[in-house]
Image (cartoon, rainbow, N blue to C red):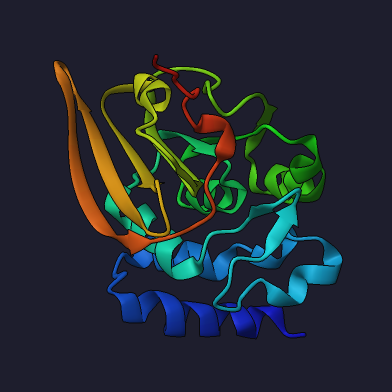
Length: 209
């Protein structure tokens, strides 16, 4: 399979046509080998309009949705970023000149994506996704959805930092952009989408008599 040709078709037919106009982001998407973030036997599905599985139920986000999330973040070279359950997003941001850490809870996922992250210059961390590693990030992004507002993720941002994530409590989800201010956070809804939910971020069930 000609992955370079498939990558160009992906950007032309799934990214540019969905109003993703950032040329640096387009160039990064054209450069990062998305197929390397999947097991070899599923690499053929990397550029299809689907969410292919990495390992253990974790999936890559649709290129259309991820590119729109990343553009909303307005990433700038020299910034720091944390990708929570977002290895491909991490590599794209690194290609754009950011210093990036990719955090995963499942070592099986890192076993698949680790070599590609290393080649992209991304630091990898294995830790529960309920609590980010490190603090004072400019950007935080996830390729998976969260069932509730991820307050622990927001706490890991510096003032002026941005979080792009999909919040999904049912069959449909909403991509949102948070911006952290000195006295709180602002929230802006971006578009509808429905990536798989990170179950470990679900709140503990409450019981009342």
